[in-house]
Image (cartoon, rainbow, N blue to C red; front, side, top):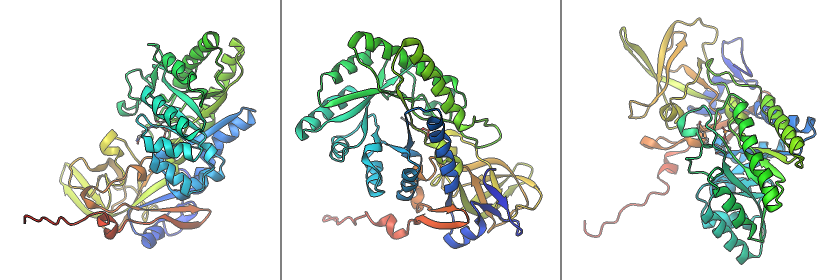
Length: 435
Ligand code: LLP
């Protein structure tokens, strides 16, 4: 358990703040982010590239957790920003993000999204498909603007992770296939558009990856194409974007590498391949999401009903669930948890943590060891910072949780809890003339 301690009251302390007091003050469910941890994770990448004298961009994949406060921190840490929608771009605009540091992704970017990106002069658009080339070139022509683009390719790497978060294999909805020559056709098409400046290649091989080998293989595949395109077209890639996917620890079953180990592996491979092919060393861009925010947050819940089926299982139900953390239901993701107000008490029993939704699959944790617990105890589920709040939803019309940032003993609300008024704000009554 990183960046946590236990105080004299036996309470879990996170980022210097008593989590039981946070639950009392802000209510539950509550996401609590330790900003110092976000900074530490960001710096592990940024510093490694700086120390090795590499030109690089570390783009925070804001899909992992996007909010104005989060992007303000990312900006302070000199991160670039990966956005995948108009909503994420709008949040970045509201956070005052430097537009030239923003990269737009998406396998089905809309006309409006592309126009917004062009109007704001973002740093680059990652081209994903042929339709987008046509759309973007028409927009650039009409607005008499230019745009840096990266070409997203699928290198045919199958990272060992959950099927749904595999993205680098050929049979993927993302990007252009390298092996069938599709990527070359895309290159040729882009090269004809004067207003598009192709600055390099992009790939993303998956998420929650614990080895460097997949990244190394992908680097090799992209270099193969880069060398070929240099010979064929005289094109030199200035940027090599290797995506995100760096794994983190959720439970003892996960054995992540140190974040700088991933960066060193990429730098070593890029330098080696550039040297041997006498290719100008490209800038390395990466897009970590989970590795920046995943272990920087926990979710606090209040325990309500406790149900024991003798000899079978004990369920403890909390006041959130798949509405604030869809990952267990969607990917069978596993988490570690602690009873935040009983940290000094010995483990007594194994329980299963149920969410509140009308859905049997709404289970946050199947087996966790806890002291003897009762209603009103506070459960802290660890490492919920990535794809927790960002994938939260209003199933059963539960309002979205609040988010608090803590840093060095200070705490501040950065996303308010949704109210019932918010929940029905967009509803309109049906004035049925026939009724
Ligand atoms: N870049 C691209 C192009 C991506 O598609 C993704 C994630 C990232 C970067 C950031 O990946 P990260 O460093 O966070 O692994 N909802 C799933 C994860 C989906 C990831 C989608 N793409 C989960 O909760 O595990």
